[in-house]
Length: 396
Image (cartoon, rainbow, N blue to C red; front, side, top):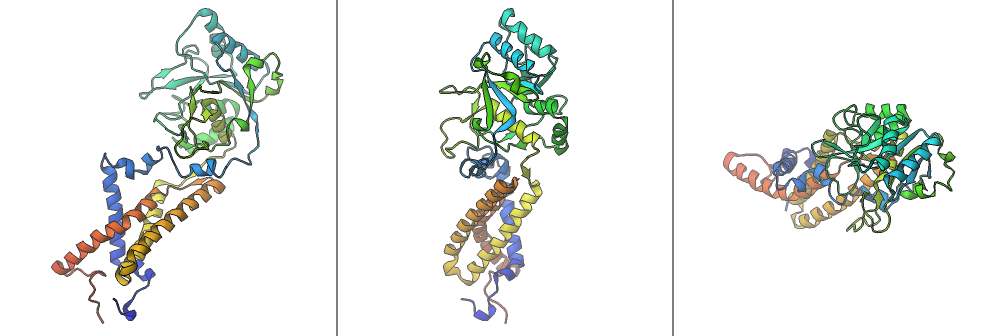
C-alpha cells in the first residue's frame, strides 16, 4: 500500500509519461488490428456502420426522431403497384398534365417488351422535360434499366450506394462526378429546386447520411389505379415520384431502414425504395443534413477520452489495486452508456453524428493494454533503469 503522503490524484496521473505512453499503445493496438484483414470488421469504424445495428438507429425507431415532423405537402408519391408498361405510361401522362414541377419515375425497364407497350414510355422519357427517369449501376458502374429512356432526358441512378447496405442509412449523391452519374434523388432536386441542388454540391460529400422524415405516413400517396377518380390537379407545382409501394409479402424494392420497429433481430424490410427516395429529396430540399465530425476530430476525441480513463485506471491500479477490477469494469460500463446517450442526444436534437466507436473500443482495450504495459516497463526498469510509476520504490 502506498503511504497517504505519496498518493497522487487522478488528474496528476493524467500528465504522467506512463499514462500518455499507455494511451498511445491502445491506439497502436487498434490501428494494428484494423490493418489485419480478418479483424477489420471488429475494429474498423467504417465497417461497423454496415452492420445490422447502429446505436444512432435508436433515435429513429425507439425515440421517434421524426414524430413531430408534419406530412409533406410538396412531395407526392403515385403508387403504380404492379401495373404494366402501357398503364404506367398512361399514369405518367395524366400526372404530367397537372403541371407538377417534376415527375420522377422510380421504375427500371431492363429489356424492351413490345412496341405497343414501350412506344408511349419511350416518347415520354425522350421528349417530356418534366420527367426524370431511373437507371441502376452495377459494381463496375455499368448502367442498366434505362433501355427505354436512351441517352436523352433527365435521369439518375436509384442505387443508394454501390456498397451493399443491410440497413439503408446512407446514399451517394453522385458517383464519380455529378455530370457522369447523378443519383435519382439529386436529379429530382436539380430539376425542382436548383438552389437546393447547388447546396448539395457545395457540401462536397460523396456519401450522405439519410435524415429520415418518416415512413409512408409522412407523405401523400395517390394510387395510380384510382386515376379516373382522383383530382390530379392537386399535383400542380409539386414534386411527384412515381413508383411501387410494396405491400403484403411483396418485398421487391423494400429495404431495412433505421425506422424499423424491430431494431434488433429485424425480420422484415420496412420501407419501399420510392419512400426512401422521397425522404432523401425532402432532406435535400429542407437542407436538413446530418452533420459529421471530421475523421481526425473523431479520433482526437477518442484519444482524449481514452487518456482520461487510462489515468483513472492507473491511479486505481497503483493506489487501490484491490478495487482495480471493480472500478475499471464499472468505469467501462458507465462510460459506454454515457457516451451512447451523448451520441443519441446530439443526433436527435442537433443532427450531429459523432463516431463513438474509437472512444468505446479504446476504453475497452485500455485495461488489457495496461497489463502488458506494466509488465514491459517493469522489465525496462530492471534492465535499463527506466523510470515508471509502476516501480513502487518511491523517493522520499
